[in-house]
Image (cartoon, rainbow, N blue to C red):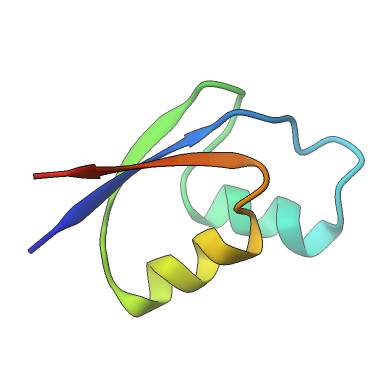
Length: 60
C-alpha cells in the first residue's frame, strides 16, 4: 500500500478551529513535524483541508 509523508510547514496559530483539529488528528504538532500515513481517501480528504499548511511527499 502506498504511503505519504506529511510535514507541517506553517503554524496553525490564528487558523480556523476545524483546521487546527485536522492537524492534530493527523498527528502533527509543531512546525517541521512529520508523519507517515496511508494513502487513502480519508487521509487525502484531511490533507486537502489543510493543503496550504503542509508539504506532502510520496513514500514507497
